[in-house]
Picture (cartoon, helix red, strand yellow):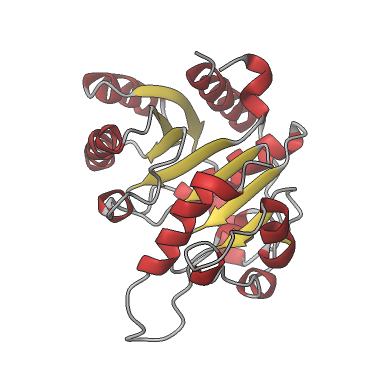
Length: 259
């Protein structure tokens, strides 16, 4: 793929163990691409969707984003264009990206979320070729990679978010193996919540031992946690350290898909 083609149809899946800060990192990546002038569609596949909050929406506006129905892409008849999907179901965010919500659990005993995952898989395969970057914030864990066909089977790059713990790196290793089975061509790791140089070194050594490329390390930012506890609406300003780490991740993605 040439450098000029990087802005066309790039599909990123963001995954990781629960609690590593996956949705926060998803929001930062989507925001960074948007600030670079890319047309970004961010898809929240968490059954408890919060990506809208990371993109600057209020809780009420996040919960008001309509959920993509299964019939849109998996049902009979011709599939709608990406522009039609974004127009009908997407919502603009203060961060720039357009937000789509694929899954939401609102009542007990409502059944599995298989149809929502099938919609995302088909959407990545066909419908969003008209946008520059499609970023999918996946639910925590590995189950989405074990589904028939794999929710992220059509992703170009899988970004695995880790915190400086052995368990999160183990999850990254398992994710990488499943991604290879699905045929996802590139897996990159992003370290998150690094407080010390020892944390950074841990990411470097532990991920190298698993054969996973470390694309960048985000420092722990106490303001993010404080703003969350205070229920503040809006985006926490990026520090120079956070921006530098995001630049590194985006450069690694560009390099991965440029061969």
